[in-house]
Picture (cartoon, rainbow, N blue to C red):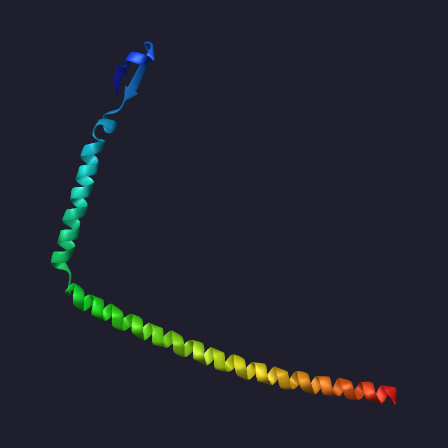
Length: 105
């Protein structure tokens, strides 16, 4: 660490560290490393970008179709169950009405 005295500091010393002096160099090295890594990735990529995007589009389309089919099946099951419960409710309601009429007679 180095000590520095600043003019408006009335004699107090400010401590600076070695790492704070090297921060710009570190940032530049980081940016350079990212650029080199991206370039290397492009060189060793197994397929061209267009081919990869085409495969991704096809896969996404397939997943979308599968999701739609699943939603349609779930919707059909839900409608079927709703109709079954409506019939059951109406039958219970009819029995309750008949019991009420019998009780009034």
